[in-house]
Image (cartoon, rainbow, N blue to C red; front, side, top):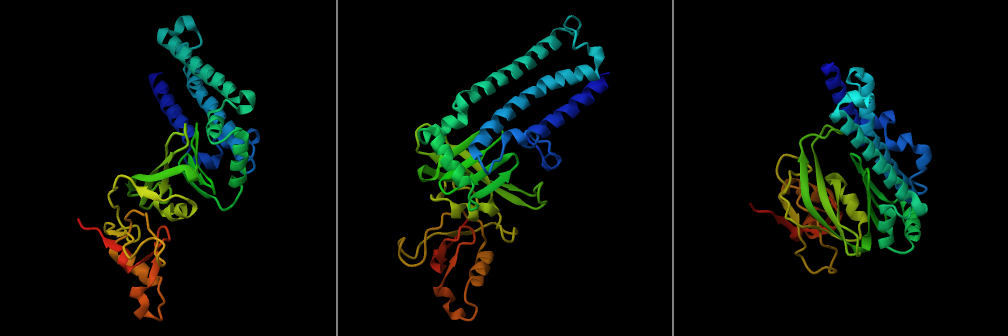
Length: 330
């Protein structure tokens, strides 16, 4: 009997973890809140705000049933535990059953409160209210911009990141963070290097970027991004991204053989003079790969003009010249 309980517990815990943070296999099988409640949630593209108001609420409610579901299923799998007979189950079982009920009931009350007054009590609606009143006018603007195909999007695990013309939006399981682009400061605070990615089976680097808004009441939040998407992100942002904590250089993203040792820093003149513009990218290229990149962007028929020419940064596309290429000394 103990073996059955242990095996069932392990299986239920694994299922719960996959349901909370679904891997690709669960997504493909449709075992996600978004797919199970697709008819209720509606279309994200048509009404982004309403979709996530419902999605976050439904996610909290469904996940709250997992502890109670474990108790009920365990009682069915192991009837000898007498979990459905309070007088025979024991104090520990009764307390566990009570806690499961409290969790589910608390989340149900929370979900009902959020949906009152046409969702005005929801934390996402309250956050939109900090960006303008009424919050539905802000929501309408967000919906309109989200429908545009020009938005930047990135999905890592169960978290989605969207950058529209005016908004930075991070959607996680229970929460939506949003900030108005003109009011934010962005800083790279950490870089994560992984020898292998579970999605592509190759090495990958993730950048953690803090989004801090000057809007009163809007708390800073962190977005996580694959370094290969950094250039596309920069093109969509209105504000520069600064390296807040001097994150150590990672391996060159081109050859992955040596450490990045090149930093593009505008030294040829003041901003606004000539073609060169400041580059705010962290060091991600080695000198050999940067040299090959620079050469590939030049007129191959006029090699005598290369030293006086410019090239776009391979990451953010900011124009630079040979004078702006700085070697990092260790």
